[in-house]
Amino acid sequence: MPPSSGEVISICIVRLSAIGDVCHVAAVVQAIQRHYPQAAITWVIGRLEYTLLGDLPGIEFIIFDKARGFRAYREVKQELRTRPAFDVLLQMQTSMRANLLGRMLSAKRKIGFPAGYGRELHNLVVSEHVAPSEAFHVLDVFKEFAHTIGVPPFIAAWRIPISEQDRQTASELVNGKLDYVLLAPSASHNERIWMPERYAALADYCYSKGVRVLVTGSPAQRDIDLARQICELASSSIINVAGRTSLKELLALCEQARLVIGPDSGTLHMATTQQTPVIGLYAHSNPLRTGPYQGLSAVASAYAGIMASRGLHKHMRKWGYRLKGAELMEKIELEEVASLVDEALSIPNQKRSITTS
Image: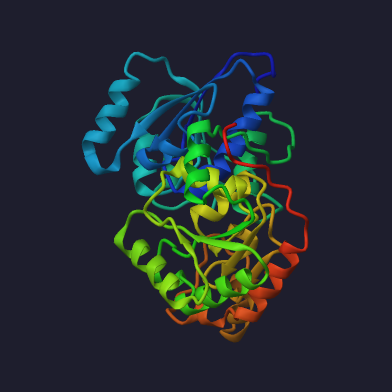
């Protein structure tokens, strides 16, 4: 039986990665906190993801550093060696790494994804499954974990702390300018990256509308090269911050951006947590499942058309189904994205100054 909202319970969450997914989970965790304010919540999380969410109030984080191999498992076990079994384990990731971790954790109830969603031995780790969600988005499926332990239906909302220092750094990167569009062109796989020349043309289009453009990216050389290429191809001046921000500083930039544009990536979902308008560029995955949760109407998607042309209609709502092909992003036309930019920029800018004064 689900505990009453006044009962102190211990909950462990296993979600190690990735940035977009941990942003989704954060909304669920904070809903659990609102319903069970006395609950002791422990979240086992990846090292990079911790730098974004590690200061969420009221949560104990245990870092799982995958770079340490099997030592990482021993370190988590050592951290928890004197603890009694958790009342509930929410196994919110199905990778082999996460499932091995869930297997070694002690909990009275181990709750996992709906039967048929799991992979990598997920069904052998959990003792219960959440109900399949009538909705299709990843976050809606995550919400079912909360519902299973008694949390009533809720609207996703986020409170992710941003320090004044991070806001100050963001302000300095943009020279205090607020009216900017942030391009986040990179993705976890090269084939999901839109063409640099189209990003450059889009930047010029935004500039013609009187809006400055930033391009961002991780410190990885691939991201730095991509951002530089976009800047070189554009006729207008672009502020290049690729490789120059922490995740918290990037979150501050997302918070104050007029608009964020990019493929299915962590930055797009970070912007969603800040209620910043986004435009998602999708060809390989179904945006109804992985798109920006509060911006599904502002998506330039070639996915449905490609699925239809390949006769894959039956897989449209298959969990985790992704298309492959290096040429797919080419089917997203510049004109379609520019039209979405027009719609977004037609809304008055409500952003405040990001100075710390």
